[in-house]
Amino acid sequence: MTRQFQSRCPTCHGQGETINEKDKCPKCKGKKVVNETKILEVHIDKGMRHQQNIHFKGEGDQQPDTQPGDVIIVLQQKLHDVFQRTDDDLLMVHEISLTEALCGFEFIVKHLDGRDLLVRHPPGEVIKPGDLKGILGEGMPQYKNPFEKGNLYIKFDVVFPENNFATEEQMKQIESALPPRPAFVMPTGEDVEEVNLTECTGNEGGKGRQEAYASDDEEHMHAGPGVQCAHQ
Image 1: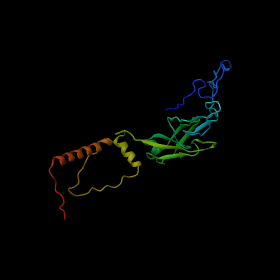
Image 2 (image 1 turned 90 degrees about the horizontal axis):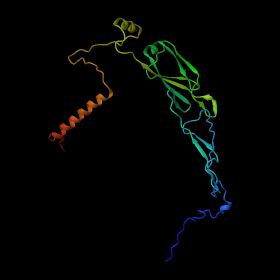
Image 3 (image 1 turned 180 degrees about the vertical axis):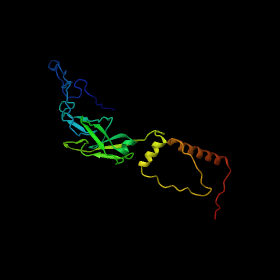
Image 4 (image 1 turned 90 degrees about the vertical axis):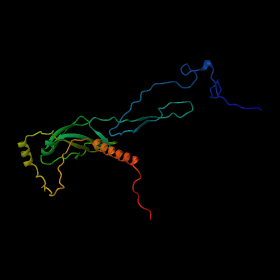
């Protein structure tokens, strides 16, 4: 029985030709390619986005009788300490005190291009926790249209004062300046029970319910068969 095997020629390395030692290039040693270091200057235009590609055509590895490939640069957008980007819009979170939320405020936003934006809000226009306000045209420039920009949005986090921050007399003065409390009517009867509010975290209620469910399950496991509906 005759069997045929194909293997790569150890002399020409599958190229189909050999080069005399005296004719070999001293740089490539007859391999027809040399290693070369090349610096590519990457220009990032205004408004370019995360994961956007920049192509350098024909700058990839080269081989004889083969079209050279491309070098593709994939942009990775770094996180910023203040701003979050959504397309051409920017979002930032700013803390204000309860006094500022009720009586107005002003503060400076240091923008990405180095400008200082003066933000003012008049007294009497109340800012509630989580309110979102916008500054038109102060977002990111549009790609290939840098004179058009998105918007800058500011989400407000209102910081309330600590407990017992004011005296009883001061509290009366504050209450006199605020809208009146809603009227309260005490219900009559023996079913009225006064309870106390306590400080608790979000996990405490869930943990208590889980322990109660676990206790109920354990009781059912040790108890006998319960009452069942009769079959008709």
